Amino acid sequence: MNTDAAVELANWDSSKIRDKLRRDINDHVASVRAAKLSELTSSYEAKLNEALSGPVEALLDGANKETWPLIRKLLQRETESILSGLSTALPGFDMDEQTQKKTLTSLENHARGVVEGKAKEEAGRVLIRMKDRFSTLFNHDSESMPRVWTGKEDVRSITKTAHSAALKLLSVMAAIRLDDNVDNIENTLCSALLDTKGIASVTKWGSTTSDPLASSTWDKVPPNKILITPVQCKILWRQYRAETEYCVTQAISAQEANKRSNNWLPPPWAIVALIILGFNEFLTLLRNPLYVGIIFVGYLMLKALWVQLDISGEFSHGVLPGIISLSTKFIPTIMSLLKKLAEEGQAAANNNPQSTNASASKSLPNTSPPLLTASSTVTSSANGTKEE
Image (cartoon, rainbow, N blue to C red; front, side):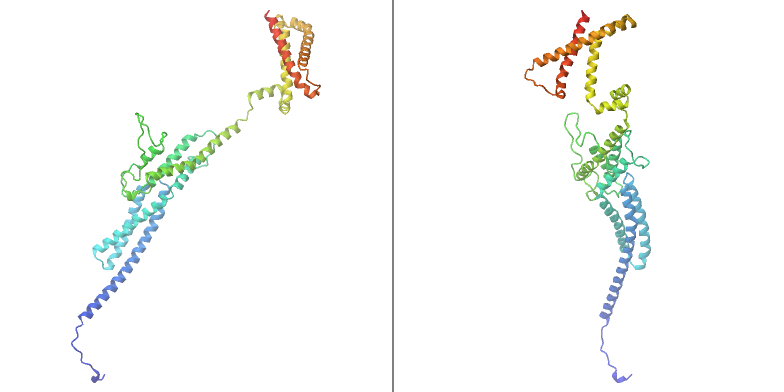
């Protein structure tokens, strides 16, 4: 090196340059630390999402009185596990205690946010969940077998049980309960929506109490923890009842149809006709209604002969004397009945001079009334003679 090339420096102040270099180094370190910390916290947040989303959704799907206590235990367990892992990793970032606490608190709030977000998401599908719960309980028995409506099932009791389960699901989804606070949402909904008297109950003075669901807040529940307001619950319940009424109607119709199919015996009069006539004759009678009229006319003739001959009176003196007496009176009685029928038919023809000679098929209905009248006249005259 040539000594002539050396430059004699002035008295420079390098403190500003050193400070700037120090600041640049610190800023770079802080930037790298923030990026690494953000990456670390993001990974732990992803673990929380995976650990909480699925189980919380499953617990809310099978909502019951133990749902929120189980969610609180799940949240506490998973949060403590994640925070423990993060607390072990934070000292390597050369952070002060306050910053570490802030980071842990942020992760804890994220865990609660995951649960609340999943609860809000499930609350938006509460109507579908209610209908699924009703369908499961209404259409399946206690052993989860499909229910067959044979007519022996108590549809009213089954329906009430299914409605009660759906209403409990609605009460579970109505608010977020991560702080273990006691509320009366379920009791309010049951008294307002399952009461047979309706929402407004009548007091002994005849007035009605106020509607407990005519509000936008729940008692003892912070507004920011409400998922479904009382008014919304009332609307959802009305829609739910309208959409499940068809299942109840179908079940009742199936029971009635089953009862009708099991009631295979014919009516009593048909059984008597089958016994007297036989199956083939009974079917013939049903296919030819004209035979019914002939049988009816024959019945009237037999009744007139019974009264005219006084058969019961003749046989009161003995069987043989009765038969002998009837044999002597039978032919004259038949002739007398035919004579009266002819006289009634002639009288009806004389009273209708404008009638023309009709065909035999049209004259049959005109002869029936005289026949019936004659038989009635004979019966009446016989009753009068007997009384004398």
